Image (cartoon, rainbow, N blue to C red; front, side, top):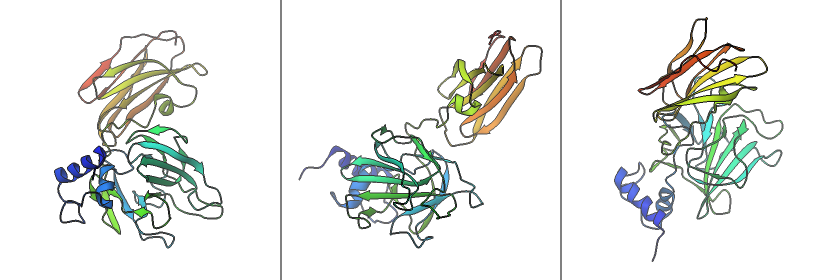
Length: 303
């Protein structure tokens, strides 16, 4: 019998990580457990974040479906980033309306009949037919559902293989380990190839456009933006590494003749936005991520 390279890689991954929490030995080649490990699914949240999953809190749940939350209040995680558990192609990106209780749903096909579902999203960041990489943002945690169904914010996550719901629902595996049903708090290892889910214009707001940038080694990039409508500059530092983890990051903006404004601290994704009005006035700007720092001269005097 022949097996795919991905399947063999999954078996090797399990061996290198040690025994999964629900098994005493490597899974049988060709088994369901071996196949799901071959996809190398990761938690559907950015690297370093911890989320609590619950598979039995709702009477509407089928076996192995998981609701994820973090924070100390019902809607504390509303708007938090959701990322792809594995690379694949977006099969569905739509609001399901009255069809079911999923609300805003993203479904990603991973090949060989495997698919992941991300339901109740507040916003969707991908379109049907789009290829996505593992760790790529697909939406944000929300509370959308069918009309009249009032729910609190959470991510409803499923892994399915083939057809025949609900019999096609499979146990979720993250980083080679089966989820500890019915409840477990898991820290995301969705780190390889992860990208920052934010953009400079998203952080600074509508009307701002990037006019300059500087690399901070491999740790991040600091951006200078300008809004022609109100004459404001904006500086933001976006991280490239340690995404989702609070690490030292800073951004500053100094309008010539005025005091410097700085945003500095331990941030998961970015520092800023730092804004100041500077129509026709020179500015000095910069920031830091990791061990790299950038400091400009006074420049961009007309914008």
